[in-house]
Image (cartoon, rainbow, N blue to C red; front, side, top):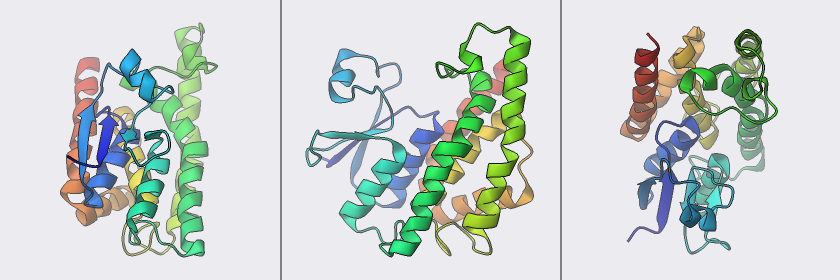
Length: 230
């Protein structure tokens, strides 16, 4: 029986990151689709935050761990995955910084810009979750779309620069998280710059089926959503 149970919701790019990672790392895992189950008493007993991705393993203090970046960091540390998460303090600092910048700055804009089209719930306190009229909600969404360009370009000018990936010649866990996140922009026809398109293509080329298989689920969901809107 696999040591790791990975609970996922397949259309999510947050989940896609963890799904790509365990495949690229060659880890022994069992994947469990928990769509529609994260508020069940059984799931909440394990994960009171009702989040995915979430891994279960008896080796963790509380038996479970959620948040895609934390999962990738933990499993990289445990299995000595130097290629995906270098132990050099300086290289690791850049990888950590890229992931924190993504989840703290880039992803919130992306969520506001794409979640309405994806039919994902909006976060409490956001305009999209409020009783505002549709025009106000759409104005806020468009503002988020416009705001994406600046943090997106930070990845090009600072984290990637003249390298192929954030991790250098090979993808790191920060690259997995970033590339997966970019997949959602297809739902709003966001005009990805040429470098970002090339970057995603390079990720899929470097990781092969480890990337392509989880990406197919996200892309399939986006295709379904777009077909329903047309």
